[in-house]
Picture 1 (spheres, rainbow, N blue to C red):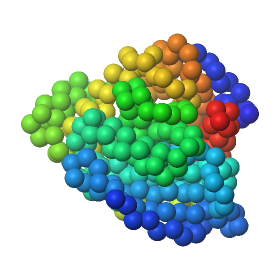
Picture 2 (cartoon, rainbow, N blue to C red; picture 1 turned 90 degrees about the vertical axis):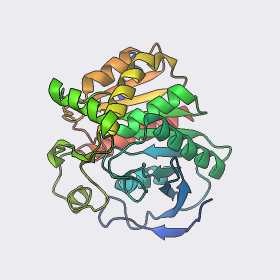
Picture 3 (tube, helix red, strand yellow; picture 1 turned 135 degrees about the vertical axis):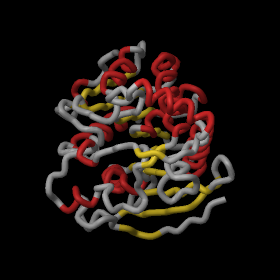
Length: 316
């Protein structure tokens, strides 16, 4: 298994399909011959808002499992195309939707109606996965904010999953906002919940580029589908749900793979460790030494993806 993390596992602590063949972003690390089938559609989510969904499938044959992927705040599912293609090469189907207010989905940019609404949208996507790929195992994979939503969904609704993968989940931030700012945010969440505010996110805090075209193509700068906007309600809903999940993680009913970089400057590594420590059993905790927030895009991104594949293969 992967030398950086996977060898340290088991530490306690109505839609319209369009099928085609796509090679994806140029020079994304996948050989031109490694083509995958790609499908996209829209589905009606919470609040009568369309959610945009895309799926990557192995070029031939039936997938051995399907992965429902929940992306992080301010980004969108297409940023995981290289991850999905790596997974497709190993026989996995990946379905990635854009959250409400993100990517090509409807909704006010950066807003969240409620955590319950976000969980309902994810539950709908899990149902779509099961409908499209009956009788094969289903994994749930969440990154950052998507990791928070995925974890809360798993604990609260108990979906039928082969396993849960979390990378750098937003349970807490890596820094504590000033008390006055946090107090003001909670007041605004009540009186002006959809006020657009800047996250202050810096691209250099997400991942280190290695100078290749593939690495540059994953930058959020100049990406019209990405943003650095958050609303008071979104912030408080995510923060509160993160604390709730830490307190209730021992109610998780499925195996968990948890990866977090020790140098993450966006979400709290310590909170992930606390989460791992709070599970009585079933958590494979993988601290990623010196890793930044987006492990799948960072300098050892290939190793991180390989770690996830190895863990899922072990659960089949």
